Amino acid sequence: MHFWQGKSITVNILFSRAGVAQHIWVCNEHGALLFDAGDGVLRDILSNNLDFDKLTGIVFTHGHFDHVGGLHSLLGYLRMIGRKQTLPIYAPQGCTELFALVDTFTKCYADTMPFNIDRKKLQPHEIFEHAGMIVEPYPVVHCGGIKDATVLNKIPAFGYRITYKHNSIAISGDTAMCPSLRELVKDADLAIIEATLEKSEGSNRKVLEKVHLSEDLAKEIGKLAKEYILIHKGKRKREVPIHAKN
Ligand SMILES: [Zn+2]
Image (cartoon, helix red, strand yellow):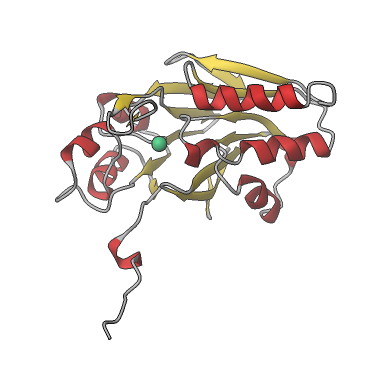
């Protein structure tokens, strides 16, 4: 977990690892927004003693499993504790996996839901406000296969710029190198950038251009902001267990 304290916003990177899960809690004195809800999000919110009453909305960068996998548990928990407040859920228009998940949940518990879910299908640069925070979605380039695992199609994916009083932060979401990413990050107080690949040298060019950043490219982008944190690291060579030969 990584914690950042700005003048008017605090950020808890609850967990982030490529292909596993990601969830980031962004908070001010009025409330909190959760960016992505990967596997384990409920456990991570509880073990960090964060207040569910402060949660004013959930925002998704895209629909890959490591970003949406924990939503069912989180919604189940909110239902169990009897949340009353409407919960807005924001995601890029066309984010199939996420909206299907929300529809399934609300259908299963149609008669016993103590709160409403407000589905917000976002267009690029459609600004919205939560707890006084101004949030702007920036379209980023992130490809993934839905129908055919071998074809990399562009999926709806956003990075977000969050501004409140003296602070602005940028969350890249999953993205390859693209011009919109530079705009998103430029002059932010804090940029939270994915660095899935260890390095660009030796990495598949198609992946760098269509799917993910490498650590060196993420640093280059990060320098456009006042401060940056690299997240969403994937499997690193040093983490591969060493097997001794007999
Ligand atoms: Zn992804």
